Image 1 (cartoon, helix red, strand yellow):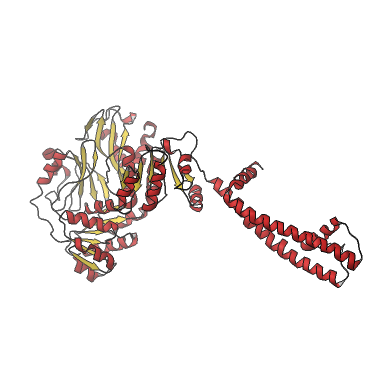
Image 2 (tube, rainbow, N blue to C red):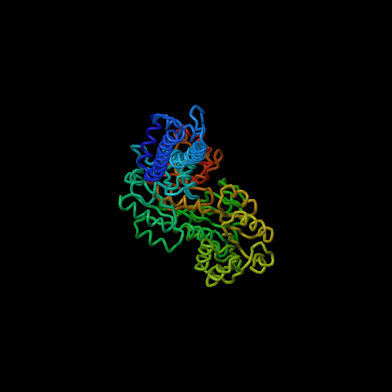
Amino acid sequence: MKFVGSQLVYYLRDREFKRNSSILLRYLALLGIVIIIYSVLFHIIMAQVEGQDHSWITGFYWTLTVMSTLGFGDITFQSDLGRLFSILVLVSGIIMLLIVLPFAFIRHFYVPLLESQDKNRVPRQVPQGTKDHILICSYDVIARELTERLKQEKTPFYVIENELPKALEYFDERVPILFGELDNQETFILANIKNAKMIVVNRDDILNTKIILTIRNITSTVPIVAIATDIESVHVQELSGADHVLPVKRWLGEQLANRVNAQHARSQPIGQYEDLFIAELPVLYTHLASKTIREAGLRQKFGVSIVAIWERGRLKPVHGKEKLTFESVLVIIGNKEQLQSIDEIFYDHKINPNPVLVIGGGKVGLAAIELLNKNNVVVNLIDKDPEICEKARHVCNKVFAGRASDYELLKKAGILEAPSVLLSTNDDTMNIHIASYCRQLNKELRIVSRISEARNIDIIHRAGANFVLSYATLGSEAVLAISKGHELTVLGEGISLFITPTPSSLEGKSLAESGIGANTGLSVIAIKENSKVLTLLTSDTLLPPGAEIVMLGNTEMRNKFNEIYREHV
């Protein structure tokens, strides 16, 4: 009863209730008037035609028993007029009491009451005392990836949803959800926006602007991170009050473009830790192919450390005996001068001068083409949309309109001679199909692809892709980097930079004795003790007490690390 009472209190405050109750009350008033009229007519016919005298209670009693079809038969008319009147009362009663009344009650009372219960089931405000939480304005692909990382790091977060069916669905999936309108200040006040660590505004560009302005009416201090679809919207959202506006689709195109092999080998910075840069160095077109890590001697010659190796989409830890192939991509760490010096030794090596082939010229593909064009890389494009082809002509060497699964079109576009192909369609199935096809046509081709669903990562790697990156991963990594005050480091799909205090069980042990790489697969790239960062690591490097370990790996590797050392982490 207490629960029903609380529901009714909420229901009575609802504007929708006022409209529904008005309709239901009007109908009940009409029904009451009809019953009164029938009772009066009952008395008139009984007195003047039947010659019987009955009380007013008897009139109401007869009217209701006939209208409800109970018909006890204790009071009946004998005349034709009386029986005709009884038929009228019976038929109207069937319609008004047995058909319309239940429908009106369900439609204008019961269903809205259930809806109010659903509305009450989804929280509208964060628990009292909540602070340093992250608010997210949509549970999209970026948010799904981001929330998984936030759960692992035990960072509180809430997703704000303005559509009740979606809010109920997410609530049932145990997503921390708040129900409320995104352009209503009360929604953000109930979410304790003033004590939030950050808010991620990830709706469409137009609604983002409105949300940002709404938040800034409440607080000017909470950091706002907005996700922009169109590059033209970045400036608008910044002017509206966003602290960071992330054009993730453009970044995705640029990240993919940075992974193609089309020029002289050189290190490609992909992130930064303190004053050190993490970079990738492709082995293709260099003298490093067929050498082992020790034989390459990059640390002795240039002071850089090889911390991991990409092999066909797999990040492998370094032990020193690995033999490098043309497909290997080294993950190295060093300062700016060291990376510049290592680049200089590769300029005398031959390169493949043929155009890079880009398949898919949407926002991601066009961003990749523009960066490649800026870096003086010749590009050919294939897209089935004539409008996209026309738009890209000014930045491409050649443009081919048609399906990329057409062998003759691929051949004409240069697939047999191209150094790299970049797959930027938003269809995973198509990207997997084309990756497999291109790999069969050109074994030496470097295939770089975008992906949408995490479950397709292994499949597309098996199909032949060398490097894969998704919109969700890039967006979530960017938001996490901002929340931690770090530079954005994009190593690849599922690969992240982890920083953790040295577990007490490993203090004083060497890297070899710790077994971190052997037990978890994580690559230790640096050790930070106080303000000093050590990157020239060997198997004999000790893990000092109170230091931080900087590692590269995927979530599974990190979870394994936490399992092994969980009592110490």
